[in-house]
Image 1 (cartoon, rainbow, N blue to C red):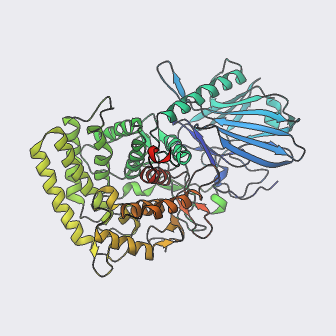
Image 2 (image 1 turned 120 degrees about the vertical axis):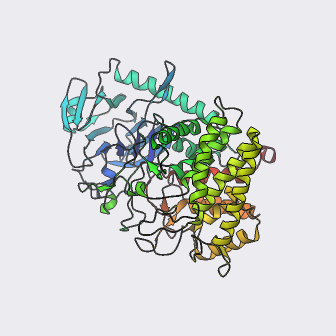
Image 3 (image 1 turned 90 degrees about the vertical axis):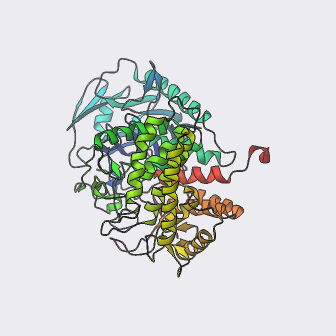
Length: 599
C-alpha cells in the first residue's frame, strides 16, 4: 500500500517536553524523544515515499478507509481524527500529550496518549507501531509483556502500555474495535492504573489546563481562532525544563523542491525567541518570557563574558555541530537530512539587541512577580555595550549566509533598539546619568545607520551598509521603533520592496543570489511584516484585506511552515515555524477592531 507523498498538512500535539506531528491519516510521522531536539523515534516524514514497510511511524489504519476529518478540541492542544470507511464504520482517534498541574508542579511527562473509540458500526483497525533509532539507521530492540511493549535504543528506553491486544499490535493484525482502547507511549515504567481510566483522567485534566490557559489570553476581538491556535502552538514550541524556544519542531524540510536548503531548526535562536516572547507578551502571557530569560541567564553565566553565538541547544549546550543522517532519504526523498546547525559558529550581531528587547518588559510590567531591577539592568548594559561595539561590523546577518559577511542593516537596527531600550529602562529606574549615556549612544548609532543603510539611487534602505540589495527585514523598522511608519524614507522603502520582493500576496526575503542560488519560495513571515508595514504607513484597510488572504493559506489545522510557494500556496520549510505564527498574532493584535466597535 503506497500512500500519497508527504505534505505539511500536519497537526501538532505536545506538552512543552515533547511534541508529535500527526498527518491526515492519523499517523504520527514525527516525534523526538525524550525531548524536542532528540533522536526522532518517529521519522517517516523524512523517509521519502511511504510504503507498507516504512518505519518510524505510529499508524492507526482503518480497513477500506475513505475519509478523515480532523479538528482540535476547542481551545486545546488535543487532536481528534474521525476515520470512516466505505461501509459507514467509524473510529475516533484522540491524540494528546498530558499537561496539567499536579502536586504543586506542572505534570508534563514524556508521554503521548492515543485513544481509539468506535463511533459507528464495527470498524476493523490495525495498529502499526514502528519506532526507529539513531536517525532512522537502527530499529530499537523490542520485548513485550502482558499489557505492554518495551523498546530499547541507545540512550533511551520507553514502552507502550495498552488495554488492546499485545499480540495484535506486535503482529500488526486487523482487529475489530468494539470498545474504547488506550495506547500510552511513555517512559519505561510500570503503569499501575487501568490504561483507559488513566488516559481518560489525563485527557480531562489536560483539556482543563489548556482551556484555562486560553481563558487567560488577552486576545484581540477579531481573528480569535487564528490567534488562539497560533498561541497554543508557540507554547508547544517551548522546552519548559530550561525555558528555551525552538524555531521549529523539525529538521530538513527543504525551503523548496530539491533546493538543498535543508536545515535543523530544533534549537533556540536568540533572535527568533525574542519575537516569540514579544508575541505572547502581547496576549498577556508573560510566563514564557520569564522562563526564556532564565534560560538566557544560564547561558550568559556560562559564557564568562565571551561574545554570544546566535543559537544554542534547548538544554543550553554551546556546540550543535552539523552532520548528515544518511539513513533518512529526506522529505519526499529530497535530502540531505541534517542534524545540528553550523550557524552556531556564525557571528550574528543582532543577538545583543534581541536579549535586551526580550528583557525590557520586565521593567514595565507590574503583573510580574519578579520585575526587573538594578542588578538585571547592569547585566543588560553589558549586552548594550557589545551591541554598540559590533553594530557596524560584518556578520552573517539574519538569513545566516554561509559564504560571506557584511555589515547588515537589520543587525545594526536591532543593536540600536537594544541601546534605545536601555535608555528607556534607565529612565524607568530613575538613573538619569545612564539615561543620558544610552540616549546619546543610541542617537549616534541611529544617525550612522541612516547614513550607511540608505541608498539614494534606489530610494530604499538596503540589506547591508553601502549596499544595493533589498531585504524584507527593512519592513521591521517601525515595529522596532527605528522610524515611524509615515517617514518618507520608510514609505519609499516600502514601495521598493513591493516592486521587487512581492509576488502575489507573498514576499521573498531577498532576491539576490546566496550560497545556494536565488530563493524560489517566499519566506512566510515576510508577508506578515508587510501587512504590519502597510498599517504603519496608514494603509489599514488594505492591510486587513491582505491579512485575511494570508490566513486563508494556513493548513487545515490553522498552522504555517517557514516558506510558501507563491503560485500554489504550498507549504515548504520546517514546521510549524514559530516566526510565521508570530506574524499571525502580531497582525491580529495590530489590526483588530475594538470590542466597542464590534458589539
